[in-house]
Amino acid sequence: MKKRALKRILRRGKRLLGFWVGFSHAIDRQKLLVRGRNGRVGNLTSIPVNYDDIDFVVVTKNSGRTLQATIDNVRTLYPESCIIIIDGGSRDDTIKIARESGCRVLTGSWNVGAARDLSLRVTEKRFLAHLDSDVQLCSGWLQLVKPYFESPDVAAVSGITLYGVQSDEALLSYCLESGLIGVAAFTNTLLDREKILKVGGIGHVQWGEDWEVYCKVIRNGYRWNLACDAYAYHRRYFIQQFRAYYNWSKWWRRTRVTSLHMMCGELAKSPFVGLLLGVKLHWKLTFYHPLLRLAALIGWMEG
Image (cartoon, rainbow, N blue to C red; front, side, top):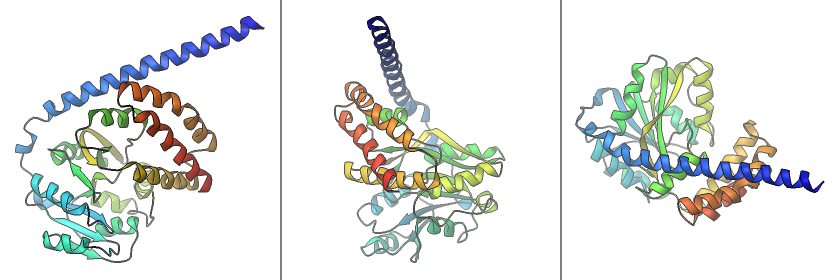
């Protein structure tokens, strides 16, 4: 009996050690990839942009604190771009900022999905670059994502979204290794407008509109690619991120993309993963990672 218990403990210890070594190596490898990425981008900014076939779209609601920085970022990278602001009923100075910055402004009482769907119908440009109102694009973002559309079955391409502080390599590695990065994310995505219209447009939902249209894209035989060299910085504070995980998981339960068993499993192993992240990257992640998984479980239970 004691021998069997000892063997079981040794097997579990071996698995944990293997996980630690493998995960640790993966984090180190991703950090090297991040450092090499900036060198690979090179002179992409010198490649000319055809402004006749692309508009930038930003969906807003009470985004006055962050919108100016996002507009300035796009104008710096792509000075002649047309930026369409679709506002869902802001009560702050969002609309004033957008108009003073020379953006095209549309206002209404629509939710996020309806606002994004509207963008497909207010322009005839082939490409629409959808951005959140609090992101900063990396240098050469458009030049990195646009070549994917040379393949006729590509309907959308997303860059990587980094939640946190600009140029934080530790946070980037955390995002890459902890599942925070997915394929479909409207935080920084280039759409082929006609193909998205063919699959039925974008669902008029408040949460998960990117996943909703992603499923339609795949069902209709198109592809939604991830451009790993293109990324946007999406600054979030801890409370904002907890709220986001809580709301996401409520939607996950309603759409049945996950289960209680999966949510509990993620929470059960999160202290160990958090400890590894704290040792390898930053001590705050020791607590941050498990708390995000707890917020997700609570949201799932209440969804």
